[in-house]
Length: 554
Ligand SMILES: *Cc1c(COP(=O)(O)O)cnc(C)c1O
Image (cartoon, protein in one colour):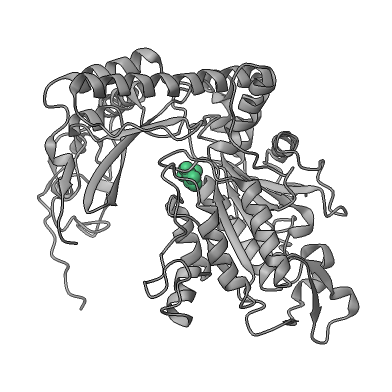
């Protein structure tokens, strides 16, 4: 007989504190025993609480909640979210939205964009017709060749993500890894029969199909996860295992984990060049992931300069253009492709900077960040989050590349009636509808004006914080990277951090530990709210001295 798990059937559960074993309706008692396991300890004590939403009010007993209990629980949650929405200032996400009136209808509809966006599917409850309109919109905005044409390698291909840019990064790096390791291109294998071609490519040297990835220390954590999931070697891993002691940035010292950044948070191109040269010189194909709007400092990598630098170095070592032959393959399997791949993580910046550029051209702002899009022939793939600049009630985004860079999907899927070219199986069809709705209601002019307002608000927040720092006579480490929508400063007291949802980052430099927070000037944030935050930080005790701890030994 299986050992009885230790359980406590009299633990108070649900809104009325009913002992667990009494929360079952008669019908659910099978053979005198409740279905399912009883809790092994009180879940209310097991989890971090949200003071505004007491856990027992939202616990889900097997009977469900009655109408009164439901109304109370949902009301508590609603008040909490509405309060937090009002003050939300710490993330690059637009938090006040207005989709409900027009799109509420679709909450009672199922929309699933499973499979390739350009192939209709037997799964007709989809919004691919809107998805393609959204993708064409961004293809034009990012200066790609459109519409998508499967026969034209220069035309764009893309899809709407079910996650945010984390999925775009994962998909981009997956595509890049297979491209650089010489796997077959989709363009050469349109027919399902050929999808099985797996002959290894033949190339120069032992490392010719062993990609190595580079990204800066200001890169989003999703990149670390992506390279682990995809088993792509970072220059740190390859350097430490194959070339210990040979770190070209500082011989004799350990390899850095990531490419160093400048103080502003942009990738240090000179140091990147030194690292890339080390590996290109040893025949490794080069994969670089760049930030366009880094998560914490909002910094823009100079994509054009990186592209020029990486291409130049690759050309010296025969990695600019490579002809791929396959063992035993027909000549038709040969192709020419680059020995490097540039992925741009434009989670916020790719959705925002094009409008700032329009505003610059109209004389509304002076300065904009460097270019990042498909005007640059070195850009291989690009991703953006829909919930950041545009604003959607949940994570979504866009991934885009050139059609000629697509790899053969793992296998064709007759079941869904469309090629399985995306990362997910079922894809969120509501997200395409939301983005379509937003873009239909906001012209370029509207968005250029919004971009100018947000840029101005970031400048305002920076000025006010600098003034606060002077008034308090205390260094609050206030900084804003060029054209960034975020301003960073010393972390204030915990209740202020929570009220404004300020995200934090701890930096170790020169033996000191500094914990920063930042605020993001998204379009729901107002000058009034910035003033309120600064007013709270002006009060005595707003900055506990512990937020700068000097440490002498590491
Ligand atoms: C937010 C962000 C991501 C991740 O985007 P999600 O939409 O949260 O998946 C990736 N990169 C950068 C630079 C980001 O700021």
